[in-house]
Image 1 (cartoon, protein in one colour):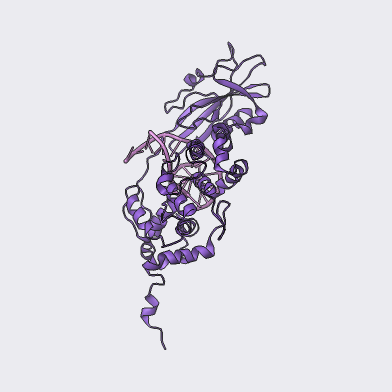
Image 2 (cartoon, protein in one colour):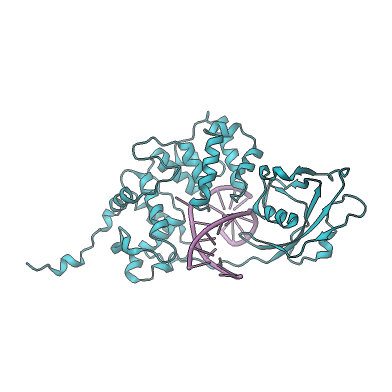
Length: 362
DNA sequence: CAGGCGTGGGC
DNA sequence: TGCCCAAGCCT
């Protein structure tokens, strides 16, 4: 008996079955990650929270070692709440977006002092804590507490916008995408539904060259049917930042280096740096040199050949590096301190400063 | 509410 | 190389 045409064109996954299709795929292809409980294992809200904060705008690969380090040093949220912010910043150094580390510590303190060391178990309660926004609150509520929430991150935005071919560009389309993503939530297993979409987005429904042939809901995807799935999600063009320049001063006193701590808020807040000029778009090197630390009457500065470049999210940076070596009797100027070069790894040094120091000492 | 806020990897 | 991107939040 010949196969009827109707059989060939019937979708294999009607829209109503999407949540089940997605969960079935997840049960076969889920990633095993350090912060994920295995099937049947109890979920630790602390681990879920810690991983979600670290994963904000950060790749799984980068987070791995940091998550392990944090968990070993502070096994519970109460342990973290009793730590000093400086210890937390030092442990976070290199991971970027340092306000996350400050908020992480503030959140642990709040959970310890205001909630007896127990995380709130609702989306609303979580949302009130520092560093926990709409996405993270929904993610923790769903994954750690089985609440019926669908967090919407970059992955889920992409999957959803392709599935429904959402034409409106982000960020205006965000509310629409959030509403559409919620339809992918099954009647149970909310946390698995969310993590399934994230895994799907990271491994199959990728920004470039998505592997649609492997997707469990490919024949149900509006963009895939049209063939322009790579163009989703639509986004508003972002404007580029202006190049800023400055001068950094690498001053040694024997085997010690002169450093200071940045202001608590703003760019690289609370992190360690070498003394340096302001970073300005209309930078003039002579003026920058006037902002060198005052050490003795005529410190002989040596300008290192070349520049250190660094690209922040919103502007590129070029730093020229001056070095000086001063005698042992020279004291650190107001607000600065000497630290042994051998212990620099223990400082809260952002990567841009590690580049500067390497350039200056090299 | 648009812009500030790090870093590393992929192409 | 230069650009885009990666489990966003805060103001």
